[in-house]
Length: 307
Image 1 (cartoon, rainbow, N blue to C red):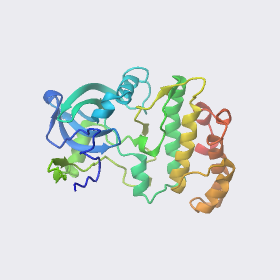
Image 2 (cartoon, helix red, strand yellow; image 1 turned 135 degrees about the vertical axis):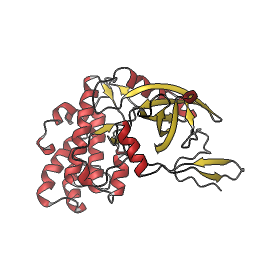
Image 3 (cartoon, helix red, strand yellow; image 1 turned 30 degrees about the vertical axis):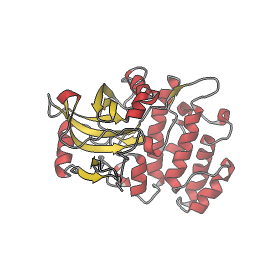
Image 4 (cartoon, one colour; image 1 turned 180 degrees about the vertical axis):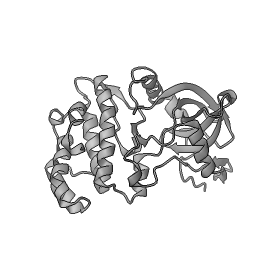
């Protein structure tokens, strides 16, 4: 039976099967590395056929995601209301459709970003120091403040959807790839005898928690974003950010009752005693049961806990 360490290439959702050296958009782009994958897409580093220093990340949706509103929603938001709106939101350069034996895939050409906060958390033992979490929360709030002004709800503020800036300039990317060569495709055969090209993801990641103080973070993946309504507001994102911050600090989900957060932080033994009351107070405000009681992203930007 075929074993897929990353995306299930034999899944009915129809993942794009790529590998270094393969071309996209009629030869416009050549894949040089796999950057990552998720439940609806995989992302590839690619160099332009017209300029070797023009290197971008190409996010290629599954056939299933291409056929439902998710992929088009992300493209339309990045090309429309979020276009060039803020330095810590993803930048869409262009988009195109790519055909494969699985069907048609929508592809977004994006500026290169680094690894996710989730992979960084796991690599650092499941939780991060308080200073690192404050940095992450502050950067995400900058993004959420922009979305709030545009009355857009991200809808999935999770560690998987927060990405480090990574390496973004063409010559620097080329040097990084040369220093750590891209993984080659390996053949895997499934029970039906079908052969798949398996490629390991190699995102550009910070080396340690001490590396992130000067690195911007990007709120990414807008497929589930929606406009605010009377029934759903941006306070949904604030709650998600609170849960994400708690996860980053402790490695676990927050308690159901916000008033239990201080006791839970104490039991986790992840913070020094002096930092627990202020951290608990901040998280309680984000995780308030009543959305009306949660502060807005704009209000939170000036919160003393972030200092």
